[in-house]
Structure formats: C-alpha cells, structure tokens
Image (cartoon, rainbow, N blue to C red; front, side, top):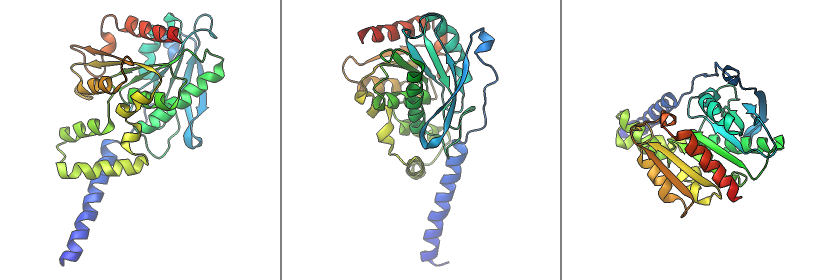
Length: 289
C-alpha cells in the first residue's frame, strides 16, 4: 500500500482508538439514589431547577430546623459517577448544626438530565445553578457555601470563581487540575505517552472549553470565597499533591489546607473532628461577612 494512503489511515485508526478509549474510561452508568433523607428521619423536599442548555437538575432541599431565613445554606456536591445519595452522611451531620441544605445530582448523574457528556466544567456550571436556586428560597444571601467531593469539589472551586454569592467552599479530595487527574489515570491504564496528548486534546474539544479556563488551580485565586481544602494523605485516586497545589495557587490567607494522615479518597469524613472542623470553618467565614 502506498505511503500516502498508509499514513493517513494510521492516524484515522489512532484517533478512533483514542476516542473509543476515552468513551470507555469516562462512560457513566445510570446511578439513581436508593435512599433519601427520610431514612435519617429528616424532612426534605424534592426539587427541580434549571441549568445550562435548558436542562433540569434534581435535588433535595432541606430547611434548617429553626430560622430558615437567617440560617447558613450549604450546597452539597457529589463526585464523578455518584449521586446525591453520596451526601446522606453529610446531611446527617450538618442538618443538626442548623444549616439549610441543598444536595443535587449533576448533569448525567442520578435523576438529573443528560446533556451530551459530563465534565468538570459542567459540574461547576451546575453548582452555580444550584446556588442560584437557593436564592429563590428566601435564604440569607450572605451565608451561602458549597461543599464538594472530588470532581464535585473541583467544580465547586470553578463555581466560586463565576458566582460571587458563594462565600465559602470546602473541598474533599478535589483535583487541582483535570489534566493531572487524567494523566494519573493514564499511567494506571498503561497508556503510552504519545497517545496521552491526543486523548487530552479530544476531551478538551469535546468539552468545548480549555482545561485551564475551569481548572481549580486557575479558578481559586479568582474567587472571592474562602476555602478549606481537605485531602487524605493516602489518596491514590486524586493524589495528595493536588491539595498542596490548590493551597499554593490561592491568594494569601484565602485557603486552609487540611492534610489527613491515614485517610484515602472516600473516608476523610471518618476522621475525628471532621464535622466540627467543617462547621467551624463555614460559620467563621460567614461571620466575616
């Protein structure tokens, strides 16, 4: 076969191969919640609210036990391939501390609408939509925060850069940059270096926004919010160095970094003092306002 045919064919096959790999590794399966706050004896309201592209997000609105209009409000954000049910443990501990709470499913997750593909960027846009929804509930606009897990934490950081209503953000196991996380996954799957650039470029084209435009490491200094960045030192999904990068990227005095020995990606909430630390952080930041 002539070289002028072989070379283009090779690149076509290479692109198809990387596209198939990308679709496989980032595919999301239906994962609707199986339990609700009713399991905890907590009253809640099922809500739907709009996000980009005329899509709708599903959530649970939980009012504070007293003084709804003066209580702080926290938006709870799950991670990749999870759903709002992941936040039940957080609801269990935060509700008695007198917060209004909104947990929701990001696009392509749980009971929310699909929208072509999921991404860290869309997580951030959905967090913004969730925060805007809380304002329709007659809450105190000066006491709104976000708590996000993993990619949800990354999206929350980007949301804080584009939604000034957010006063405080807690992230747990959040990446500093999407490329860092994907490169770590590539190594786990033994993807050759020469294919990595092509895969990353395809993903960026699919998202339609450059990685740097929504990466937490570039978003955090643009945000007016204060941050508590929590990371387990044994996290092998989002490496602990990501938390250190976020801290380094923040403005002076903007970010507290809590590195927890012996904890991984999904068990930081088992650390003694975890809930008190989060409660103190939020209420201290809201008092500054």
